[in-house]
Image (cartoon, rainbow, N blue to C red; front, side, top):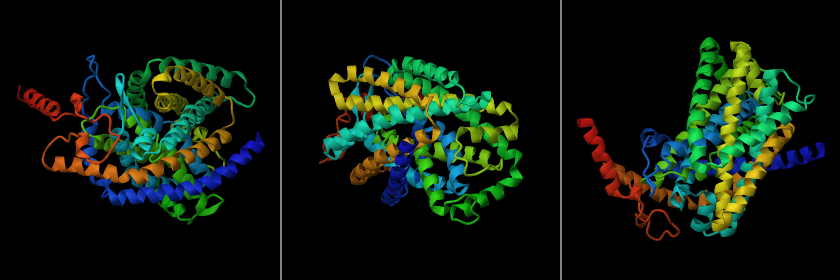
Length: 496
């Protein structure tokens, strides 16, 4: 096991720096090309997130922008926000938080482009849509081999590796809450592993509609409660906040270093853990973005950009503040247990148990979101014969959840970093070359908004661009008449 861990660590280190160079480069490039869309159109992000969906042919509601946002948030808001940020601080020091913030701001432009592309190249799938990088690589980039490779790597990364990590964090948090040593206890990790595998399997059977329904309840409720506790901790230590911010900034540039390894470790940990949490550029979120019924692809690009801010600037920052205001011990490679200990030192031992529940629900919702990413890509790989493969995949994911409950934390995080790097690099290549098409979609959107119209897209709006399947105007949600009727109905309701 130690040899495997050492090998993964070596690969991890090399890939990590390659990823950072490409990730930062693409994010800055897209920020410039889009005219800083992630800040310029921030008010528009809030406007479109509440947009109601269209209806399926059987009369049921399609998946709205709001629900698609929470499918992606289910994957984003998980152990990366609690265990991952604590791990980044314990290894890289407070400065890791600065690089996490900076990458989130630039990465929101990448999130806009990849999610817009996910919407643009989506296909109809029963009661919803499906799409993602495998689709835009195959059709938009005209590289089917690349789409197939990405579909395999995301299925393995999210369905197996990341879900193992989520289960691992649930066990770690529960053991801290119950004061149990998992190296000595057999029944806690095994019992939790069996329970998680069975419950997740039951939810998987309901498909994307059930996953979105669960996510749109679990994530906002627990995230809201967690944010309130974090704000309470900040309020209790308000006089120390200026010093904390100063420490974050100074440590980010190698000044006032509190851990070994220098500025390189600080940058690496901040960007990596931020990427694991907000997923901007990884190619995961476009799978969720593609599920919604919207009138224009750019709407989901905007919504998912907002998701990066929600995840990193809000939830991750709260974790960082809770930890840093509690004078942590650095370089201990601690995950969720560090956040639990910090919260308990501020609010009492009951907070440990609250955080255990929060981590359980965050991680559980992440398992559901992660699972869907794999299912969408298995559907891409097997097309009409996907059903047997999906059933097999569900069983493998349940096994991975159980296995993750009993493996060591360092190995789980290292494996996650390696697979994350491979997946993100593959997606970033496609996003870079297809970015020009997303820019045309954005231009079409802003032109309609300037005319005072509700933006509606048709594939004829992009002459010369092939492979756009779902935007031929046959679906009422993509027609001007549909949106004008909705607007008229809203006006009538106001005048009554």
